[in-house]
Length: 197
Image (tube, rainbow, N blue to C red; front, top):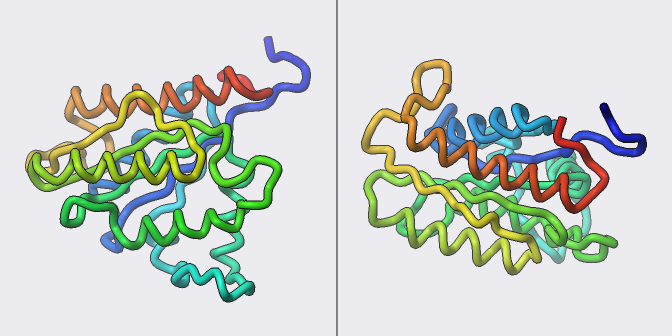
């Protein structure tokens, strides 16, 4: 039975690339689907959305509709999941630009990602770049005052991980993405007036 005053956790996914249905976008969408199974409401800000964002410039106060939408969506989020490809052992510029926009939350009562669990997903063609990029993502989350989930996911995209519908067909990868989603939703449920189901 639902408790009075409680609502569903709201989890926002930020990530992807300029390539439609990239591995990082599929992984993020799958993680959000897992979050929905945990009872959360979700919103995906994918590569197409992120590519339309102007470069963040703190000296220019005017914001585009997409910039305002990004900031407002994260402002009301209880949890966040970030997915990026590993580009030369670092986070993609497009995802980093989106995260730079969260500077606009600095004066909020709950600034930046304060009080939110943040899951991390990194996709890499091979094994070497993923770990370094995951460390970079988690460092950025700390800088934004978020709580990185205990589990961060690195996926080696040399093998086939997703089918044509976007379903994760690799059991280990699916389990990792599900665990990240569960940790983000669980933290939100335990630390605010939201419910899991």
